[in-house]
Length: 337
Image (tube, rainbow, N blue to C red; front, side):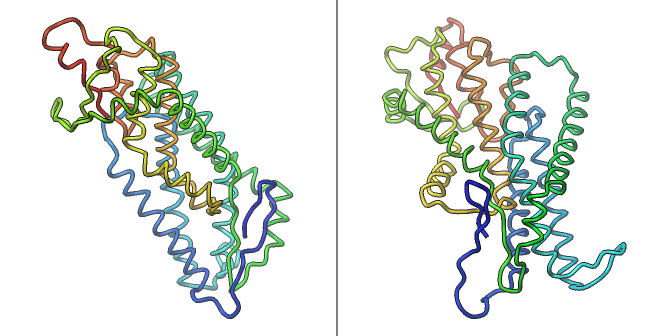
């Protein structure tokens, strides 16, 4: 089933005859692939990052998906059994992901807003809480987010009626598509388009002369400084250009994927769409936005520049913090991501 912008569900178009694959096997396969990809994304991320609310939420998503996979596998193996007075059948292989889809579907915007506030406070140094205290706060905040989402889904009468009336059958499993993720993706792509339209000439000037070098034992991109750029003056347009280059240098394939999904109006189940790649994409977007708003406070030596697990923003700010020496004037032309 699909969900429209008005949150109404519609049946999937089905071909005549029996299905080629058991829907329960399809759900299990999708859940397995998603769980493995989530674990892979966590494994390849940068390890020297500071803790954040979104990082903690990502770990919770991996745990919830892994738990769902275990439960669905258990049900698929025994097929029909009773536990604590509740009878479980293959029907629940469709029902449980659908319930989780509603929970995931309502989390996009709240998590986006809370993560944005968290990054703003951390980058602005407004949070005086210790590292341990911050992690404890993140842990209980994420638990509260999940409890609130599940309580809303299970307690909402409209969702209850929708779940109880949906025709779970041997031919297909219905699913819920989050309208929040649609508008959030549209918003972020719109912001990227506006930013690119604002500084497209600077982006083209820098990318035409890009070279790959080794800088501080890391692979970096070398961009000769534009003639009218002063490395000692913080200009928001210059910073915006560098942030855009660093962001797209990491996330360009994912941006193209989001454009294709929106253009073709591809409907993705909410329990699939809420994944670690999507969350880290949001994380990088929020960090770039906060860096731009707080540009007058940025210093290359501060640890908050290591908050992103995939984009190394640190080199973006080197031209703005280098002092007048013969050695560093050469380095001032380095903008790396």
